Image (cartoon, rainbow, N blue to C red):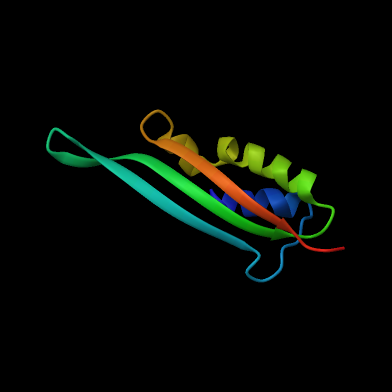
Length: 91
């Protein structure tokens, strides 16, 4: 999902500085028929965005999961969710 988000921001011409986008992923498992099975993936983004781009960034975030090939592959089998902490740089 990170690559899809980066692509969405690039298409929208939102340029992020070095270290301005961090993603942390966490997986949860359950035991099914004696096997550990991935049941959920949570992604947490931290973004430091240029002033005046919040609306554009929020739009990209709202659509990136539905455009992500990995999320589409997992759909129906693994719950995928994300959260984002956004810090807008001063103008």
